[in-house]
Image 1 (cartoon, rainbow, N blue to C red):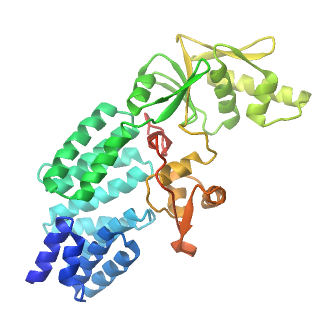
Image 2: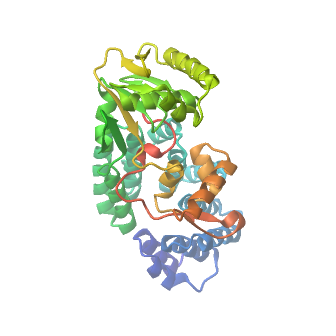
Length: 406
């Protein structure tokens, strides 16, 4: 490796892409192409970076397995930054194995961290946690130690283990300071900000207030009966009753929870659960059936009692009923939550992360674009969607997969 390549690589490691480009911008040999690709990625031109990394991988000879594997890892990182979550995970895993076999443990670990970050983005927390547990960050450079701690914090935050998340962010901050990379320091501060901005909205006794992630953790551990509209479940301490696939039952539970300790009129329940505007006897019959199903689902946590004008929720063994709602009232809040990270997403990546069909996501994006809440650029498969970060609340509770369970 010549002196210019060495100097460019050191500049990139220090977070100086312009310094790297000053040394290799006019060169087309394989190492220079790879370094140019990384530099363009750091500057934000991800499309150009991807093309350069692919050119570099082709330019390296068949005997340069390590260099080709490093290009695969770099391309995977570019794909992750551009929220292309459909890139082939098997190729990244093969590159990781190659790097490990040739003694490049730092880049092999970096490949593993990229895979964990993808798993975290698409809500597969159990797999992410198991993969992360296989890595010991102690022998790695400060930058990789910071990435490790950020992933620990991300998983802990999604599981509402805020004490663990705070400690991991503190360790990440120290490691990022040692690394001296401004972009990494900014990512750590962004993770810290998540823990100090509202994560949900509490509705109780007719009042509403915003909760920080730590307050949500305390609420879930309390003796209250929580109708959780962030994940469409009803919970009390360690008991969780999922209603995500029963939207009518959850709509009834939420209406009853918001009215507690009072009752809800039958006409109001029909409007909330079925969207009925004109009530007839068939609607009332259906309401009785759904209330019976809700009683069965909530058995052991609460009773749904009939009153003179409707129904009321009567909790067992708890003193309070509260509703936990999204921080903002928005039909497509989960899509906005992912776009609020400020990155550009493809509709296919959003569908993968949220577990919805691509067509459903495309309809949601069309609606949000019509109202001016999101914007797009590019055409066809290259189209990306983004929005400025929504101020005032974190997206933690809006991301896929229920927090306390996986």
